[in-house]
Length: 160
Image (cartoon, rainbow, N blue to C red):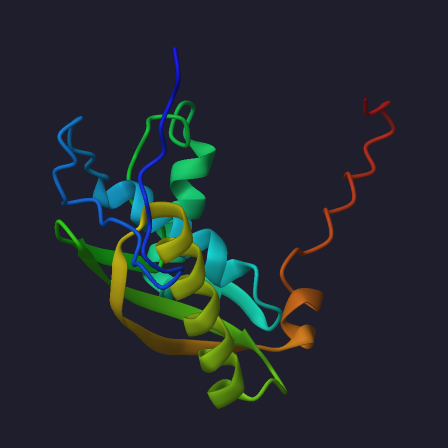
């Protein structure tokens, strides 16, 4: 039995998009998959401190503390919203940046990384990546996040 490969006319032929019916079936990708890819790609860029607005970060921290809260399969990725069609996707990001980083350069790097990751992994064309910078993180903010534990009261008893 011999196998034949389809002839290609040039190396410039575009890769088939997801919505294209190849005769062997159709592939669709859930918005939550694109959302996770975009969130991971944005966090990979140096200078991005966190994702989401203050309210969504607080809600996410609360959800993590609830037993089963982080393993419920929730599709919300803090700070990432997507619209996914058959062949295209649009991404909206809410980010917090490190103090001192050029926001313009960081935005370009995040946009480039998100577009590359989503297009490479899904085959969808990313038509836009909108970035909203909601806050700036200062290194001094970390110093006061956790208050020291109060010393136990001296009652003459052994505290264990």
